[in-house]
Amino acid sequence: MRRVLIFGMLAAALAAPLAARASASTANGTLSVKNATGSVSVAARGVLLGHCDRCTVVITDPDPNDGRPPVVTPLSVVRVQLSETRTSYSGNDLRFRVIGGFFRVKVAGTGIDISTVATGAATLADGTSGSYSVGGGPFQSMPGVRTAVSLGG
Image (cartoon, rainbow, N blue to C red; front, side, top):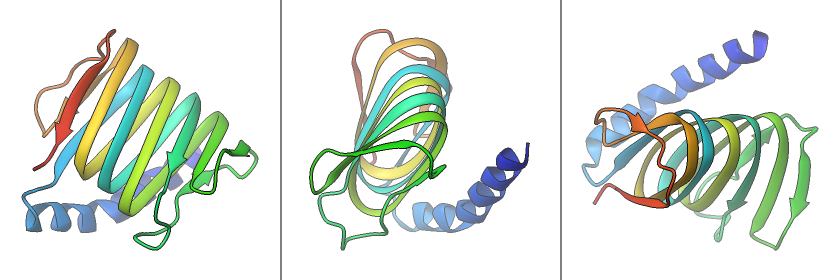
């Protein structure tokens, strides 16, 4: 319960700057994923906050100087450095965030929650449960087949 409260406070603290940034730039798009089982991939420039119950998260940060470094908690997750710019994290109850700059994030597992304000593209696939919304539109069921969506301009 304490972790949920901390994550909620973090999300609320980041929501105001994100909203201000989103309204300042009409080129940004949004993606929201709720309690999904399947995979979500995002390649974009902006902000991504996420949580999953049980999953593997692969984060690619091609330029570590164009934004803040990715953060994944808890620190006890299984971390594998795949290359100089690509890292895989596996475990239960993972929380992750990427703020600023260009990034690629792929999440595969269960209980996936993601909020993104960015310019780029996302791919949703293998959905067996959960829902998603693009651009503030109505929530739809996660697709069982590979589905590409555009984020912003």
